[in-house]
Length: 166
Image (cartoon, rainbow, N blue to C red):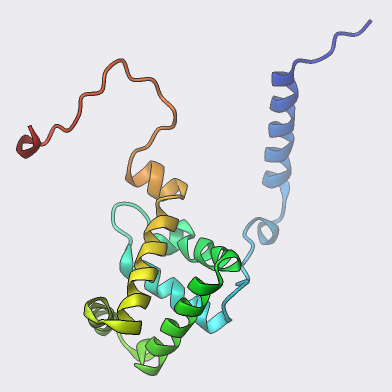
């Protein structure tokens, strides 16, 4: 009677087959372009620019490279109020000429929104919150930037090492 493979052996075979399939796929199938689900193409393009202004590339990739824009768009499927607030804010930004501005002017305009009351301030706060949540739920934000290494065992927890907190 043939011996049955262990669960681990089967998982290794599945992982190897998946990796081989991906490696042998044409590049056009590997790098698929995201199609927005809840925003128009123009709104999604603006969202991509906005998330990179909120969390720009530094020694780690920015929010757009991490896929925060895609996660935000996908999350809008389940959150009608957020979708309404976000799309209204994107329309306000467009009316304020965001798309035609250079980087410094865009930052200035977003700063004005961040300090505003009412719809503009509400929009900016939502955009910032969603960007931060999305970014730090990705491998780039969580592991690369924050250094999270998963469920690891610590013999002791050293606590904060900043001099002003001791």
